[in-house]
Length: 321
Image (tube, rainbow, N blue to C red; front, side, top):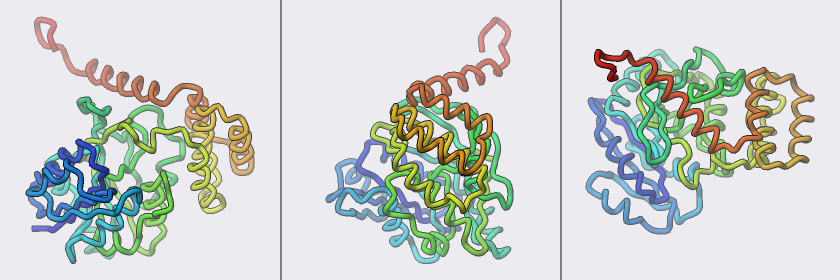
């Protein structure tokens, strides 16, 4: 039976209980659950899970997710695969059973693989949407930045490689550490750097294997901090294709600057776009949506997706669904 070490960083949110139990409930795979508390001591939510967690480690507090994931990888079982799971997400029971055979086949062919998947999305405290996302999977050989940022789709079906879907070999997890200096875009950064290692290959299975939470309280990704996004993006200007870089700036940093009503930031982002390329129409549209609060956009996108799904369900005799 394949062995997988599951790395779960947490700050003690109550949702960690669901995350741990979803990892423990995996079928056809032996799991070692490593919970890394980014705190000075183990919180009550984790202490209550002692019988379901194989190892608990504390960082001392305030070290952020990348540091916690690196600590978790260091505590993975020797020779095991490594999977990442955020404490506000959960896995479906067949997650690893769907991904491990793909990982091991690619590794046997000489690749250094990372296997992702589709997800079911939910708002914090809500039920997941029944429609799996993203609509389009990453193509073989595609750079993750091109897949994630070029001609980005609007709505919940947009391109994604969420952290809680990622499974890789212990060797690759150790070879490519998460960047502990980054306050955000840690997952994107890790994928972009992994893809540049010799023999690396990123793929996605078509099944939805995880439930991904949108808009968790206190989520760093929910903030309109264009400066930290721009500090990260500048590392890749001249490395990524110009079209990809312009699309990222339009849909991400320009949109955040507009949300923050920071007009100097807007001007700086427009200069960066002019240095590179004209953004695609979808990404230009995303930039314009920066004038609308992000929480409002997320609510509308989730509502539209649920309405579209309900409309697709055939009505039964008598007018009921």
